[in-house]
Image (cartoon, rainbow, N blue to C red; front, side, top):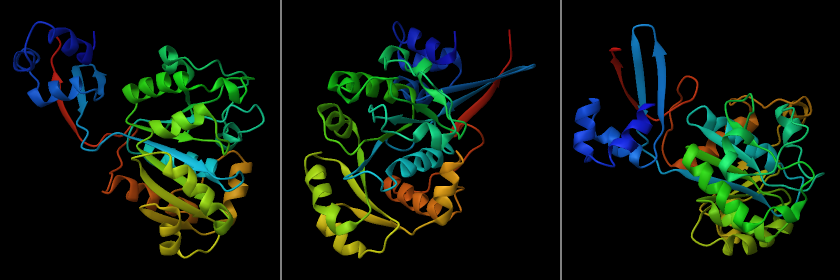
Length: 298
């Protein structure tokens, strides 16, 4: 039984302080685990190093939406997931159930010919390793847009919040009950715009109906007056990402651009705005801070 399971079992009959004393861990660790923070373990020959995540940020679900297709929203979602994946356990969920709708598997170079139906109880089996430092949940093979229903979205989001530190949702341009539910399940909604004037009012109409979210806009590949657009769309801030000639080539080849590219720097700026603070990198699956000790095997 791993440490998280032992803590959850023991609090059924002991208080938090007693559990901490019995397991020789700080009481803050016990309380953190009970709040759903992750426990990571690394086994060595001389003992077990237990790393316990101490998350100092509020968990975020970032929905990346667009008023129309072809504006780079899926590319933004993938690069944002990669950026967050360098810092925390991250899931990118592709919510475009149109069989011909999403290029995400091609962009990531992921081979998944027949993804299974979404099942909140089997999220760990359905989520694939993207190869870019985050997991990806692809639409079910042949499902069709009508299969993305609100109850399914609620169940998958509950499971994703339990298993991941950050969730990025790539939402299609169409409006449906399931897509609305996905947007409303997010803590943050980022709308991606191309031709600003034609799309700004459609974007505002959508964002006004999300209710109580942190709202941002990204203008991809064209010049704009950021302050005027911020007021027009009704968002906290606007990130303008200049046209990056390397982006199309990279995606066509099934790879993401590095963080120091033109596009990558724009994504990094968005992440800093969303989180409002520096988020440090760490090796492998990253955490914001961890307490570690070596435990001798009895």
